[in-house]
Each structure stands twice: as C-alpha cells, then as structure tokens.
Length: 401
Image 1 (cartoon, rainbow, N blue to C red):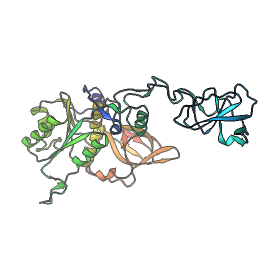
Image 2 (cartoon, rainbow, N blue to C red; image 1 turned 180 degrees about the vertical axis):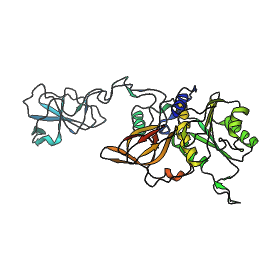
Image 3 (cartoon, rainbow, N blue to C red; image 1 turned 90 degrees about the vertical axis):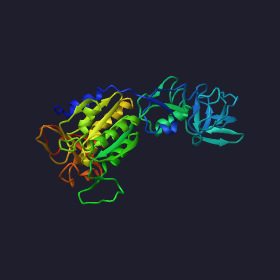
C-alpha cells in the first residue's frame, strides 16, 4: 500500500464513521468535557429591573427638575418592598435589589447629600435609567447561552450554576489502550540487565496527552517482539478500550510484526498505512467496527508527533468532532528548508513579540526521531510543506501543543 499525503490522511480521518456516546455528569465534573446539548436560558435575567449600584431609587421622568426626595423605605438585596416611588420620594436601594415600583433611575450614593428630615439632595445629576439593569440584560428567555460542542471551562460551569443546572450532558471520551512493543525496552523502575536496553517513555507520554484531552486510559504493557504476545495485547485492548495505540513494530524490519497482526490476523479495515511525513511515516490507522487501532513508530519523538497528528483527530470524532489542532500562522525567525516530498514537523520555540508569534529552532538538536527533549520548553511544531522554503520573516503554519 503506497503512502498518502498528510492532507489525504487528515481527510480520511474526517470522513471516519464513528458513533458517539454521551453521558450526564455533575456540572463541576464537566470541566474540560465537550457539551452535547445547547444550554438555553429558561427565564430572562434579570427577570425584573434591578439596581446595578448602591443608591436611591427615584422617578426622574415625572419631574426631571426635582432635586430633593424624602426617603420612605429601604430595599436590601433579596427583599421585595411594597412601597412605591413617586416624584417626591425615594427608596434607598442596594446592588442586586429589585427596583421599587414606580422608580426608573438609581442615583448613586456619591451623587447625593443627606439633609435633615430623612431627605436627600441630588448634587450630581444622572440620566433617566441610570444604574438600572433592564429585563433580559444578561440574557433573554430561550437564548442559547452555551452552544452544543463548546469545551466546558470555568465560565461555562458558572453560567450553568446560575441557571440551576445540576447535571449536564457531555460527549463520552474514548478509552485509550496503550502498549509499547520491543524486546529492548524497559519500564520505569525496571532494572537494566544489558547495555542494549532502553527506557520506554512512549506509553507514559501518550497517556499524558490522552489525559490532557479528557480521555481515560489503560496501559496494556510493554510487549516483547513476539507475534502472539502482541496479538494478545491488542486483542485484550480492543475488548475494553475504544482506541488501541501501539508504538514500535510498524517499520520494515524483521521484527516489525504489528502491521501484519493488525491487517492479517485482526482483519481490521485499514484507513491508511504510511503517510508522507517526517517524523513518523510508518503509521497505520485501522478500524474494527466502532473501534480503532493506531500503530505508531517506536522512536519517542515520532510516536509523540504522530499521536498528536493522527490519534487526536480520532479522539475528537468520538467527542462530537468539535475540536481541532490549534494551528496558527507564525513568523519564522530562521529558515525552514524542506526539499523533500514529505510534510515535515519541526520542533521549534515560540515567542510573542509586538503582536505577532515567532518561531525558531534555536538550541533544538538535530538528529534522529528519538529526541523527545526537543519538545521541552515553550515548544511547538512548525509545518514545512513538501518542497518548500520558508525564509526568515516569512509566515509558517505552526501547531500549538
């Protein structure tokens, strides 16, 4: 099967047929989730004219020239007073209180002078309607305040609480099963027995990204280069997970068994196998019903980048397909030269100066696709299109991590 372009791979992911699930959660537990319903206002807010400041409620329209008013009542927040305002009297009213009947304006405390006999004098005039929140000023009945597909943050939780929403419907994120293959890899804490062994980081890096995007995960283990062991690990993962992610075993070596297992033994439908990108050209995305296998390369930088590029879009489909990678246009501070036919993703530094984003590769190491440390710091992925040359001060697409 021939490799496809990065754009073709993205289009195939967007066209995937995935059945989404939803769940009801307590609003504070919805943080970071994707809303699966429109949140509508059931009433106007405020439902009645309301004081926006502490002051004195008057009726200015009936007698605009009047400057002195007798205080006839008080209206603390949370109370309802029956006393009415006319052109000669006022009611002391506090922030958040309903405006008394007959009033149309609130004169702030700092704009009046207290006189004898419980009377005030206006020392600085205000226009009619001043400091009065109109009905529906915050929102109107049946207004969609938070649309379906919104990612829930603190503001959304606060608004839902103000609407007396206790439970909210969100998309159920997929469960991600993760296993790394390779007879040479060691788990953290595992003692090395020879100098050829390397410490695995892929499974934990991928687990961290999955958690960052709201997914539960299951670690399926570090699997030796053995067909039966790999088949059992993937099969077990498919029994309890929505997406099984493997790292290693997808290239063309004698011990790269994953691709054969996915295609021949599991009978999965291949979405694509091989993408013209760097790093991580040897990648397989396959579908079994409503479940997926994402077989990624073994090098740490390659597996991380390919998970971001291809596994996140699959996760987004499970979450209603409202999310996408955060791609911006930045200004290149150095040259990005790509003479190849591949789309190249270069670990770069990002900064913000004078209203623009800038990217550069200063202090980034050059070498194999194993250099995960290149993603430390304030790093992003600069995208070099096939056979392109981006000179300094030119625009380059950049993925914010």
